[in-house]
Image (cartoon, rainbow, N blue to C red; front, top):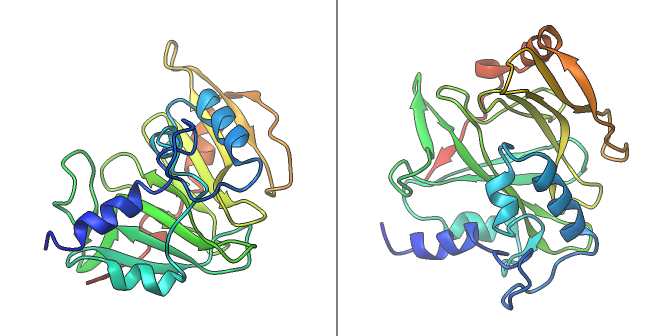
Length: 230
């Protein structure tokens, strides 16, 4: 079981140097670094933050196809081909086995179905490269990786409401909506919503009632993505 885990763990770390400037990344598409740094700065508690801080978002992998990634997965790891909003090509969601990492939940069995609490998204970008678009921690217990019928990803880590789609070129996960409760008062929230990945993000204040209404939009169990486990 350790055999391919090291290789796939490297996959999860592919692009670790994208934001730090160290050598090792094969290529980063133009504009990725600026966008990620801004997003991570503003959305400190985001489900994408860890991935962005690690330089994972937008990093080019050594793989030639999404199928090749699936073949490299170790026993117990899960995968699912998904269509994510914002980009026409299919993407690959990969989740580690339940014992691969001590600090995060990977594959979880719920009502006989394999779902996941930590997922990395891979895409074939517009220039044909196989790219790591980022990894998502889906948040609190039972809030597993889920999507609505339009391909929008929902993540609810504690006091946040987050939705995601892919960038126009398919290289990175972007916040579609991001609303965070003010933890100092727990009475107001701030953030932004947008309809497409071409729209700019304009921050504004939200009431707690508005935040709660947005959270109700998440499909939760109805939208859980089912993974195939190797």
